[in-house]
Each structure stands twice: as structure tokens, then as C-alpha cells.
Length: 206
Image 1 (tube, rainbow, N blue to C red):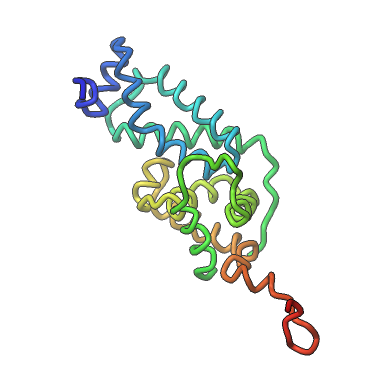
Image 2 (image 1 turned 90 degrees about the vertical axis):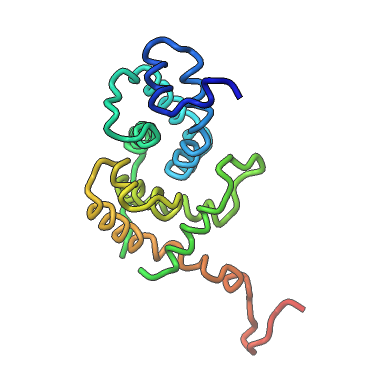
């Protein structure tokens, strides 16, 4: 392990601002995976997420001198990637959804356990269902749900990243879950939608 790898995040950012080329590389190494997890779950598309992540790191690289040390570096970086994702989401048409129980939470938390790296063979049907449903939400509700329900951040941590009150995060999550419910109910028992029974009550498949 070299000396740079032993430095805390704030020291690395300070050194980068002073011209140390290795310092920012170490920050990227430490935080890239978690920031990718945010981007891919917010945007749902590997290409879009990759572009947003690149935009975020470029913004952080150029804006290191503006870091005031009032928050953790990881929180500051997450704000930047959230903003990069939000910029891309604004360009999309967000369709309105309709009016929760734990079905929505089950579907979102299941996504939390998936790999943070994109699947080269393509996402599963359930993952695509979740992201398709998330596309229907207003951006602020989607961001709150991704951080709290899919990535496991505490409400206060999500509030710091989004720069809003904790109560606002709770409210956005609650409204988002209610909107998602009609689109995710089938994930509670996916086999049920595949079972086809005959008018006599027997299974048509022999």
C-alpha cells in the first residue's frame, strides 16, 4: 500500500486541489463502485449511467477547490453524481402514475442486493420492471427511493446528499412508494401470472 492510499478523503481532495495527480485517482478508486450503484439505479441504463458518472467525476475534478469540508467527501461526491443523473432525467418525459403496502418495498429492496456492476448479458425481467416503474415517478421521488430503499442509505444520509430536510425525504419516499405499487404488485408472486388454468380448474400444462 502506498502513502496516498492511506490518506483520508479530505486530505486527498486537498492534495488534488494543490496539483497532486495521484490523489484524485485514489478518490475515484475508493468511490467509483458506490457512485456507479447510484447512477445505474437512478437512470436504469448502463450507457446513461456511465455518461452521468463520467460527468460527475469531471465536475468533481474541476470543482475540488469549492469543497468547504462541511460534509464528508463521499456525501459531496454523491451530491455531484445525483445532480448529473438529475440533469439527464430532466431531458426525459416522465409519465404520471397512479396511487402502499410492502410489495413496493420488497421489489425495491430486492434491487439493493443485485450487483453494482452492469450485467453484460442484460438485466433480469424483474429489474427492468422496477426501473420501468421508477421511470414513471417525478425525479425527486425517484432519487429519494433509490437512495433509501434501493441503496440502503439512512434517511438522514439521503437528506444530506439531496440537501433537503429528513422529513422531505420521508415524504418523497412515501409518495413514490404509493405511486409505484400498481406497477410492482405482480412481483410479489411472479409465478402466479405464468400459471394458466383450464375452465375446469386444472392446469392446462401436462
